[in-house]
Length: 140
Image 1 (cartoon, helix red, strand yellow):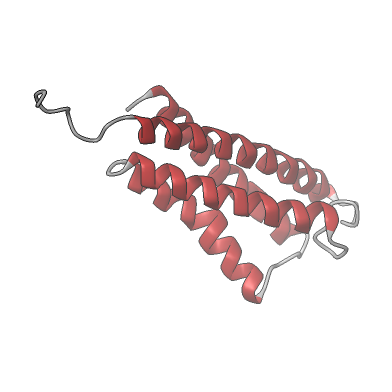
Image 2 (cartoon, rainbow, N blue to C red):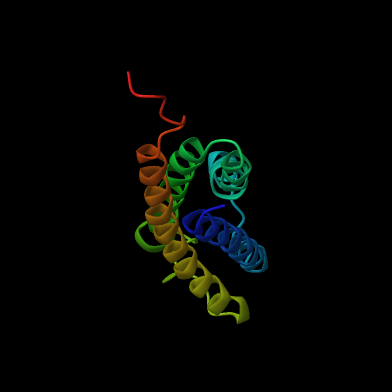
């Protein structure tokens, strides 16, 4: 496994762990997602990146592309939900409670991890695209 791959794995694992803490703060603050929000959160933010890591064992280029798209989509969704959209999920509107600090800090850190993940995934994708998949044959 190459160095960039290890960075990507570390970022995805940290993202998953931090997302679990953030989900706990959502639960404690009774900000529970429903409907399409819940489907998006579970599939794209939680499960998708883990699946991307499994794909990394078999295809660097596919995994890196998948992870770049998933993490970018996660960032856009989270940034909009937590910082732009009015509503109970906005970090400026969350009631002041013990879990509020955890909610706000984890929202910001998850966003930073997602941006870093997109950058590293793009670098892995670029490196995989430049690397020939088969050894060069003898000159013709």
